[in-house]
Image (tube, rainbow, N blue to C red):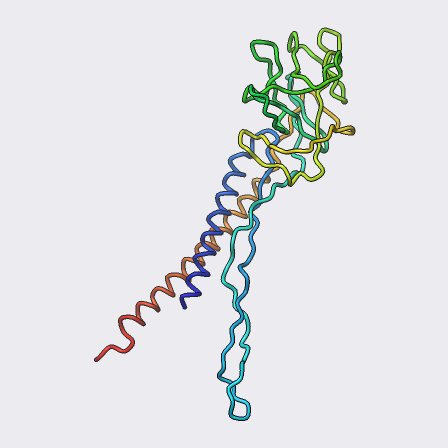
Length: 257
């Protein structure tokens, strides 16, 4: 009976965490380039139940009854990197990656991050930055090296390869990067990822005056949330039933009447 109580509690903990993940997805349904997360759940190792009640030739022998599960546990989370819907804008500094690839940005200390959110702007020094003020990285046409992109104005044009024309001259190329396994990326907040072993994306297409929307399906998320709530409530009822049975066992079984 106590084992059933532990099983139900582990189920409640799992469903509560799953609901937190779904809620975060729904909260970011309008976030540019956001990728939804899924909670991974696995069962605890099953326990073999056996006894020695069976007799053979007057001798008690081992009798295997079967196995019993001890409930579920959280096995981390995974991110769905499917593309979101592309939205046309009238802003020349809005960019989107079509297909695989991430924009690279770096903070003031030079730490690098990756993002699918291409809603950029110019800071007061003329550098192309994301919404958090991180510098957007591209290839300098003069040095052919990675560098922070600096523009003279917002009146720029870009081709599908990311070459940015500023005052009629291409000084930078907006580069994108890929990874052998996107699951190696870690979300660090502010719609950014950290990762290692990034490769320059040779086949990615960059769309100007376009933003990639979130890939969260709000209908599916609402259905998942309702299913999770029902599962949570079912575990609550199991705990209540076990608690009531234990109360009777303590207070009524064996009492003198």
